[in-house]
Length: 527
Image 1 (cartoon, helix red, strand yellow):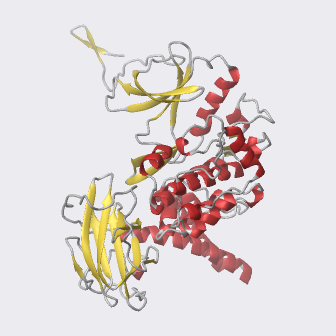
Image 2 (cartoon, helix red, strand yellow):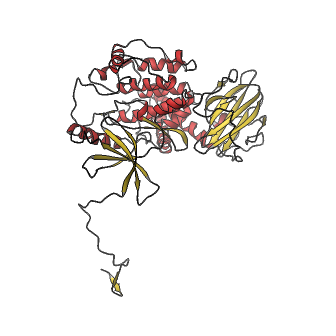
Image 3 (cartoon, one colour):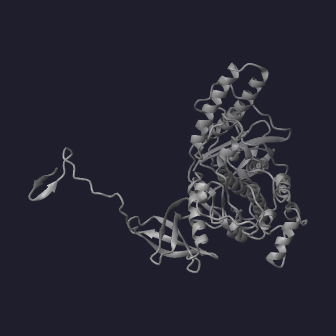
């Protein structure tokens, strides 16, 4: 099958070389352990590097030597791999492979998450800004929503199992790790893991009361733990304080009263204060679902609906699971939006064909859900189109993300949420800044039909400020964090300082604007 030249075989397209038989063969990985990341009671996590790919880093999780001979521990170890691998969600750690060390201990080959745990972040940078907490909680809810849809209950949600890194253009990207004690409802995922009743498993302080008692649990156990995480992120402490883990568990099991987070942190949104109290209910039926949790988090953020669509797209378009026509959405945002647009078109067609007012009303409601999600994200993409000059060096006297904002705050700042593109007025803004802004003569955005713009008037004595940055920026106005772009906000007339920060790109820019009740300010920028 080969030609020969000078005694050497030469492969041609017409005469390919014979295939090597690979079925049943194994290969040796070229990764080597380079350092310890962390360790726990039964396992260790190490960093591995590749000889063939020098820039690649992986995390290798191994069972500790003292537990490698325990069958139940090994079964749970591989159950963790099956659980995480079953979840197609960007906020869940990726498991690439399994293997064994030279001493026979099983290992999991995972993605390496370059960033601290939420526990470390809170300990070093508390109090975290409200907007930062909101973004992290939305992502945690999204990951749990994906897990619960696969009948997987994590059972150990706590700040040390939530890693925070920079990814996908976001400074605060959350990854849920450690499914080692997850409850797997799917028999194929559970494998040979034996379920034991009346056995405590979890972390005191975060474990749900029914879980602490060894009773059967459902997804609401994770919501209890997520409520504790929210409390801890807001206040830097746990709801229950005790001298021992046993005493703490007793307080949780009996549902003893605790100080609401708003008493410890007055700027806690009232909606979040109530959400924490609901999550920590003894009656699991009164706790929220992941969908309810995320929507209540988003309700307290200036641009919450858009953040919900961006950070938790499956939750943003969630409908009753009993609806047989509900689409199964991808975890990829653009793909999910395309699926949503197709479902929206189908619902509109059904609305015209369906007999009776009830059918038309139901189709119209579903159409509005789809239209709101699609138009909100499309508006964000279209409005980000101008490029700004290089950002100046950050000022030392201004707050950075994750640090307490100064006490000075603008009077009566009234966020109105992210505005659709059609709602953005085109009047000339008043601005004395180096940021590019639109003016009265600016062309309409691509794809925007002429004559359709509507003007949302500000209240007397106030003016509107619209800030759009690609890929994104955290916005501070007069030293106060007000959210992540796009921002549509009302401010009192007069001068204001606007600071834009994008940590992954090391960009930090400050400008001064003058708010006029009759002339909205529109700041647009590309890093």
